[in-house]
Length: 282
Image (cartoon, rainbow, N blue to C red; front, top):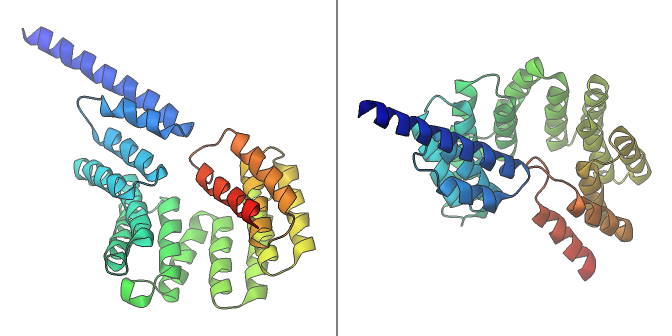
């Protein structure tokens, strides 16, 4: 009897693992609803199942459900830095979407989980980047501040020189040290010359400063580095729409973006559709 019980348990675990793997594949193809449908049928939910459910809810914009799932995952594995990080992201989005009454509570939780994620794993660069962004944007009474951001930027630079320059650029921009910000962005490009994201950072910044011809040259360089990159399509189109220029080209780029094979690391399709709506209404 014990042998049969053990066999059935092993089969159940194998089926759960197979469902989790297939759900992860669907998530990576941005098929979030289908991924969730598979996960809901998993009988014995482990931390990884709750975490993936949370990520699906997060990508669908259901942030309350996302944080509920992340909390279950983190409760099962309280030393997992990635789960703490996702909790921080979930509460961060809830802060952005909440009323003035609830936003500070959610924001504080976001900071606490970001800090916990970094404490649990000092090599978690994504958590450090999100914590840096929080320190940079949040007021002092919510635990933010430029001094905290500057200290963390130094830690980021120790692990990733290009990301460190990008962090310094953001700080300089906040302090209205625009020449310094541009210099840091160019240094990031020099350190990581084959990373298309570093070129896009500069292209966006030059457009923000009204230096459109230089921005166009940077976008052209990004496209040469990665000719079929959805990120390049989206970034360039967004700059055009925000500047209310080259709207026909922006529309073509957004259509290309929506037809691309996107991943969870790309901006959501809804953002591209919203930009298309702005073009139609302009």
